[in-house]
Image (cartoon, rainbow, N blue to C red; front, side, top):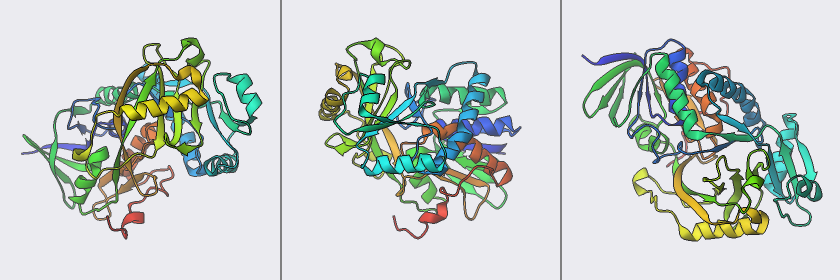
Amino acid sequence: MAQHFDAIVIGAGGVGSAAAYYLAKAGQRVLLLEQFELNHQNGSSYGYSRVIRYTYDNPIYINLMRDAYPLWFDLQAQAGEQLYVKTGGLDFGFPDTDTFQKLKTSMDTAQLDYEHLNRAEIQKRYPQFVLKEGMEGLFQSESGLLRTSRCLLAHVRLAQQHGAEMMDQTPVVKVIPGTHGVEVHTAKEVFSCDRIVLTVGSWAKSLLAAQGIELPLKIMPCQLGFYQPNNTADFTPGTFPVFFAHMNGIYGEMPYGIPHMDSSLGVKITTFYGWETVSTPDDVDYTPSQTWTEHIRDWAREYIPGTAGSLLSTRRCLYTLTLDKDFIVDQHPDYPHVIIGAGFSGHGFKFTTLLGKMLADLAIDSHTPHDTSLFKISRFQSIAT
């Protein structure tokens, strides 16, 4: 007879680990399944740092971050370790740039506190930047970084403390939803549950297709570079902000970076989008591009010359993109006890603890108090893949 759980979560990345935590915290008997080892490097949720910020070009996301920040603070307290590091955040570029204008309008609409700085003010506060005449900046003090792998592991550890079971290196081969529950088949075992949460990242398209849901998801392998600054003291979280450059070019779309937490790590620099997409994880080439690392160093040499030192490390990770770059957080249209989180599109990690709570809410109550209006599956149902 299959071992039965109140809830099974498939995928122990940033969102799945959080969903398991909130389900277990709510008293559910939870099984968390991961096809690779816990905290693996094949997906989207491994590493030293991700940006956390309120600054979004849609007020809905700003308001969701108002829900997310307190959850991160609570998770830190429960975990007993620092997960969020405040640095402040600077968006800079020419003020007539479309993305710059949309961001400012959104922050004004959401009544978010920020500073609008001219070039001289930016360079007085942060002389590390060398900006062109006419460039301006939007500074928000609560931006910072999340310690990525530590966040994931904290969610899993706390879920286990609340009684959740976790099995890694356990690929799921079949998910069979029924009227009142779900069967989950691995290579060796069969489990059953009352409700299931699917958070499998770049592996979502094929798994959801097997559930009758065809979504136009694309996978974008992006590359991260960690560069040695010429003076490490100038690029610590206390002296240098996370930043977004509102510009496109040969370097990619919107270069951004994160100060170093440790002198051995270097300053992280990459670009938001602009990479070639592939259809399945099997198509991903994880081999880093040396051409790209030189291009992004050239960009750094122009705008933040103190970060353009030697390349300390580089690797690729995966974005899973929806057409509109908004998330999918919803119930299966035919099986409401099948809960789906997907398409977190390269900007989802800062929301992971909130997304986990939202998915747990939907699994337990079929409702969440948080705004999911952007995240419905139905917006894609008429679109051919």
